[in-house]
Image 1 (cartoon, rainbow, N blue to C red):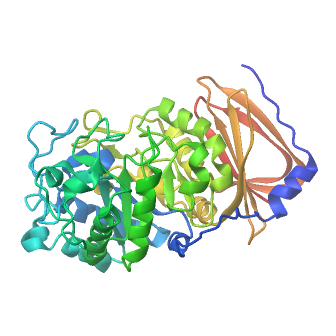
Image 2: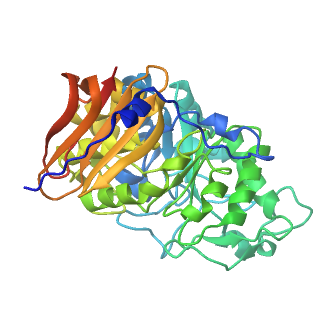
Image 3: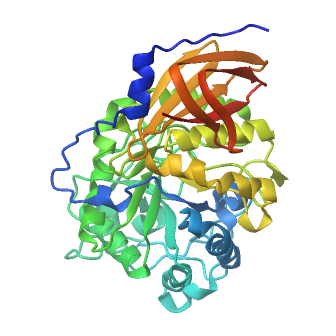
Length: 450
């Protein structure tokens, strides 16, 4: 067993426990105060990991009911309907791209499939489902693909808000989505392009949408022009709609642009219940620490815990394959990194352990109030991440073993400090040094006080 010793000078620890962060300064220009809409990382539930493109209204409501009862008091608030809610006959284990039955209005805008979302009958869209969620004290979100429906282009449907422009006049074939063939690219240079996106977000605002996840925006091609169309469309719609761009890997070269247009953006492709996905995420995150905060959040992806893939896109129905150590490590990294937290499992199926991962008040306080998040070191597979609480003066320290074998660690505090392990609330005492042994893929999360 190889031992790794990490010694940090006292001056560094003082900085950890007493300094406040220096927020990044990014000029918002004409995009208003959209960053005020997510002052802390969004927390919620997304239907993707458990239902793929097949979720139905009763399942959305059941998850909303659970969140309202058991999670809302801890800060969980978003209920998000993921991909292809406008297809009547989608399937688990992929997508029906053979004979999909789309639901679309006369303006070329997808509508919820009534056989899956009965409250959408008579052209009501998601209004009644959003009202149901709002009545629970929660917020409602949806997923869309970027672009304009191919069937709207083929039928030359009119673009609302224009004088005679039709869908076939505002599209192109550049950088089409490689894995889902529903839409064409909206050509930002064409008259009517902005009006099309405006018409979408005006409709979503009327429905009561609070959060939107837009796919195929960031990778393998970064769609700068469409992101700008979307930002303008949200800003003109009259409702604060939090914008999530997806999937990753968002290019770091686009960091300044994405952080002035979106509230959150994916750093990686889908994270599933495999340690290799979690490990990859922690490596990719190294470049994104400077962009955490100020209402904009690098996104670790959904949390693949609990009961997943009930009718999922990836794999058979199962409880998460991550071990308990790996689940603690995932939640430790997501929370100290201050990622948005979008739980992917079926909430009503949660066991007590899974619920405990979502309701630890000290962990969520760190997630909500942490500042100056940064990587201290990543040596020999032992990742150390720190943040501060500028109000209490506490420091937070996560030590994660990314290795497939047991590892020792040692960390000098540079003076005597009060230490508590956060997940279990165990008092370590007043110590000068932290040390221990971590099992493969295990972690420990400390709160350090003067």
